[in-house]
Image (tube, rainbow, N blue to C red):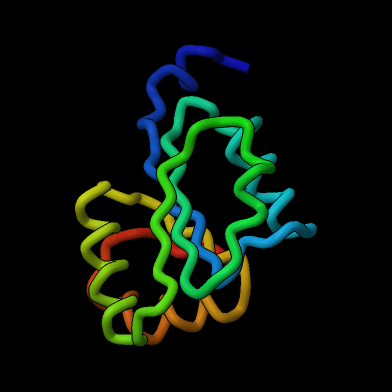
Length: 116
């Protein structure tokens, strides 16, 4: 593999979006992505509703935004602002609720890649 190509890749700001972050399989996947994959990239986590127990799975520092207690329009505005303030390039929706929320309410406003 040509290492010069890797060095020229632009670092990404990746937002992991989920409705809950308890202790389970999806949370371990997010923790592994943040810890071991693309370590040069910056990772962010947005939790839409509740449950932060899974944060103890993260061994690497990550900026977390928590939206518990807000209504849907407040969450959408907060996410738009958060995405723009942190120059997010890619959103990874880790569950159906976060994917639908992003597709319905945010996609047309954003110039980011959405992944499921």
